[in-house]
Length: 217
Image (cartoon, rainbow, N blue to C red; front, side):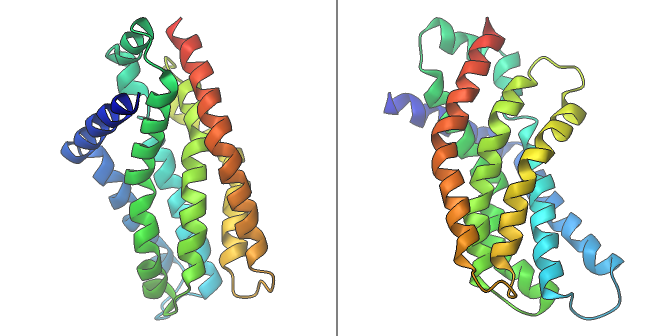
């Protein structure tokens, strides 16, 4: 079973490296982040809390852009049907897709976030790194069943965005509050994010498997 997981992961990583979609997500994040200093004044640095919000908002939309293609190609080319016919556990497939999605739409942002925060505000805070490290996998896990639910829809992009955004709001709120310097109880939001991540690792992939099986049938 583990070999199947590794095989699917290698395929996804290879496809992402060779395609422009993965790099487009990171490019979108950086370009969207540039809008805030250009639009909010001529000062050298933005307010620290405003910079945190800007990074989280751009992270949200970068995740949404990558979410649209999460299962689409595997559904269209018959890969999902092949796995179902050969009784390959779809749970392994879903976990590998979630990990691959996070590696290309979440992990690079996590690594770059301290540098981006320093460039925008002239200050740095390791809490930004921790909040994104906990929050970005949750965004991927929440989006996974919604991306599966939208398979076959001709207007999946706009609908996917409108359905997913309300579920992302609590994660954004906890992430921003946990990073803010004015928050005296700074660990509380991190504990909440960690609890959501722990539950989401089990719940959302299982829900995605149910939806994918219904889509195949």
